[in-house]
Amino acid sequence: MARIIFDLDGTLIDSAPDIQAVANGVLGAEGHQPITLEQTRSFIGNGAPTFVARMRAARDIPDSEQDRLLTAFKIGYVSAVDLTVVFDGAVPALEALKAKGHSLGICTNKPFKPTEAILAHLDMARLFDSVIGGDTLPTHKPDPAMLHAAADALGDGLVIYVGDSEVDAETAQRGGVPFLFFTEGYHKTDLNSIPKTAAFGSYADFVDLIEKTLALA
Ligand SMILES: O=C(O)COP(=O)(O)O
Ligand SMILES: [Mg+2]
View (cartoon, protein in one colour):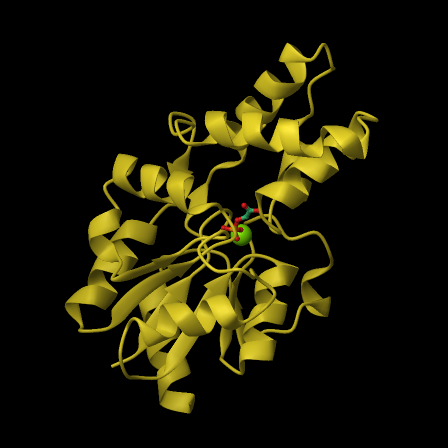
């Protein structure tokens, strides 16, 4: 049986509208113009501190405001659940993999508290035996330490990482594990330039893709 570890934002859930709403709440309270959904998607992937730094850069807000705005952002983030949806077919695929005996984990740069909140809101916490957030360890992706921590908590078996971004591809590569790339998330560069074991654009055939990946490993 395998240990299948998932990124969260842009891989299992489309959370950009909630993250955009939190960001625009923070910006609006300071008298700044909002950011677009497209900007939001492009700022996600390296964790909340980097998201806030990118948000500030887009609105010419100085570095000296980073800590204060990050705190405001994190306060809003914990309850930002209403606009987030799960990608079609993801939950049935996860349930099928669990029923086959695979163990499932989360390795996300999203801070742990909002990760816990969104998994509970979507009734997905029951699917995962290990959840590592962007602030669980002293380092975060692309440092593969997070991936290893998520894997260690799942016991034995081949590790597969599933993600949607360049950061996830680098994490898997540095961690030495196969990488399945979900093409419908928040990647920034050309698909072909992202190192991967295989790519998929829908969860309809995801269980098959896992079986094929395991057969070849
Ligand atoms: O919070 C982020 O920047 C991204 O989160 P992810 O690692 O789940 O894509
Ligand atoms: Mg992601």
